[in-house]
Length: 409
Image 1: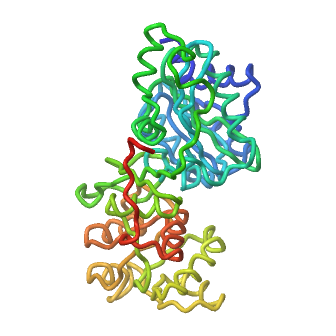
Image 2: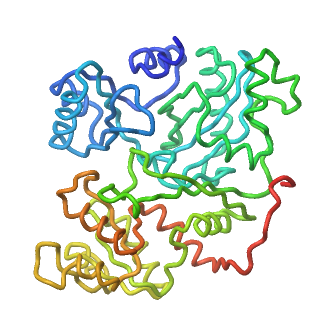
């Protein structure tokens, strides 16, 4: 119980990371609004804010300015004045996680998992890829060293989960969970390591070296596996659709392929997610800070024969850069406006990067909910859309896919 508390209590956890000389995003726990404003200015926006002692990312948010931060802190301290709010510098890097088994001395990591969507999307809602595809050489060795240090410090006997951010060739620990995690079934199936069986034997006193799977990071398979989350947002009225720090998925599927693109395609197919954007009608509403990054994505959509529709700001931006898009009226403008377009199913896909999630009064929320309720696919992460486009560009086709027997991988 002490070690669970040490992992969850921010000040105790910070002290442990300091003692072990392990990097983590700059930040601190705060008990009042003025302290929160000061910390956010010190670490610089955007910041990740969250309550203490939560599961599933409940109550977590990314704040890009002081106005949103103050609103968040006011609501949070009203709801729970007994505990602090954690404020961290938000690092827009690659999120990586491991499930590890420790026997008190040695560790076994069945595999290092990379998230497709950048940090800021809850790990349960991210497309997860194993083996990782985009890490610098030496990163996995660092992950092994840090995991061993933390496991021994927390006196782990059994399972633990650690989430990292790989950012500008540095590795930062963002969370340590001294327990089993939702990714265990996924990594156990694809690595062939009976994770829970081994962890149970370790808890009962056996050593990893006796159990036949070695220590450190386990050997990689010859295939690529992805975990694709499944959502029930069309069945739950009034629920936010956009991906963010709060977990929203209600299930997941496994895709296995010879390449990452093939595995992602299988996962999207199995999860009932959008797999095909070729020659589709795509409605775009992109926040200002994402427009530069979105430009090559818009060009790729055009190259795939898509017809683009966009709200005024996005349409003007695309036009300035030589990309044709049909302008769409906003919610509060006369019909036909953006909601009419969605209700009449005149588009196949909505791509929306939210300025702020979980606010039912905002136009973005209403647009996303309308799309879901009228059966229009919604993507709120550029990373996910890029993966779908890449699959299309590689001409992955379900008729060409190979079926794998997981027990023989």
